[in-house]
Length: 354
Image (tube, rainbow, N blue to C red):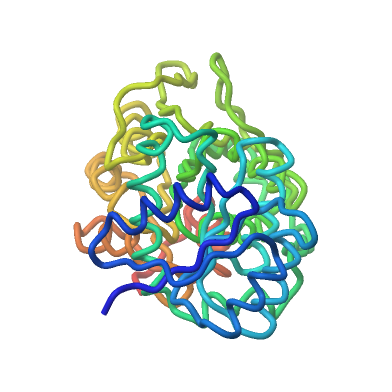
């Protein structure tokens, strides 16, 4: 049976582009088209598509308001389609908090290059969204849209001068998982953190700013020439690989995609293992594909520690599963307990496999 998709966008050109891309796949059919948020709510109720693509900024009713209505009455996997602007990226991240499945960048024109840039991403995400657990789509409605910061806790003095490093990988469902993790990280975090989240260029800056607001660990998007600093976090910018080089410095480059993504976690993890060895704590959160698994193997071989998010809290149990199957996971951890696991590893306390 084909995957039934509804497309909601105020631009006739974008509607047609998305329709052409989706209908080029033999296993997907477009069953409805809409022009605004009001159409989206009506189509969700009357047509009940398997997946909906929803523009963020539309007249009459925005994608954000429409998403709230859909998730309250007829929850389903929704892919937000957003322009690569600061405003669009910030709103798209808010949509992920509310319950959107994922976000893709909107093609800026009808050129062949613009279409090719999103085609593979769109088709893959529609297929994965169809298989998403409906409970994971409903979950954000149970609490506030943005995780409330946890009550800060001080770390033991033995951690103050930690020379370890934490590297984190996430993809589909990652912004929400990172928000939960960030809200629970303690004050005076003693190690640098580097994050690879699979997102288009333009979205990662907003993600970093959001994490910076949520918790007590400062976070920003990485730039060329940055160096690792204890108690500070860097997010790899969309469209660039991030790797460690000597003396705690980082390098950004536009080398070919790995596993179809750039930035890639394997790129980060392998360089961290090379330069930091047993001092690395690798964390693989929710996401489709297997990015991070090979890098996790390298971290383990170098004597480091690897945590993977437990299947029970993953939106998509793809990347964590790949690391587990590769024998590279020390412990599978529910996302609400991940900060505690990382803190325990920094303190040198033993962890036990789940």
